[in-house]
Length: 164
Image 1 (cartoon, rainbow, N blue to C red):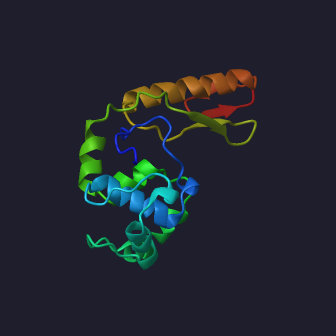
Image 2 (cartoon, rainbow, N blue to C red):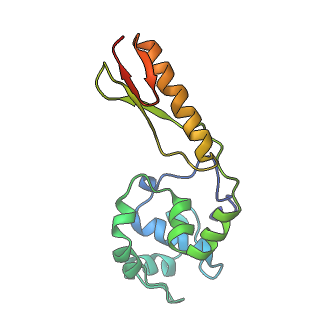
């Protein structure tokens, strides 16, 4: 039977490309509803289950053909994981509740040095939250200082350098 016990934040979600479109739709729906469980191997499906896949509608009223057409762009996106598809698209409320309970990321803010060589500046890349504006400013100033020192320039003011 399908493993429906994987947590939402499972470290190795199955990439969507490893499933056929019909397969992932059926897996998603059968996981959300115990009324239509499917064996994980296609060879173990009953003829009734096989017919449900082919016809696009099963006896419980899940219209797979309609779902597939509505989510064509999602299904073709190789970066979308099975978990994201299952919860974010099919169960938006459940996904939102789960997301709101997750701890905020404390990733360091990533910086990128850009601009001409005689006047480098540091741009803060968007983080995942959890960093205050004051902290971002502090890191940007530190980044500017490092950029200036690395290129042998004089730090005249924040975000702006001129040749010494």
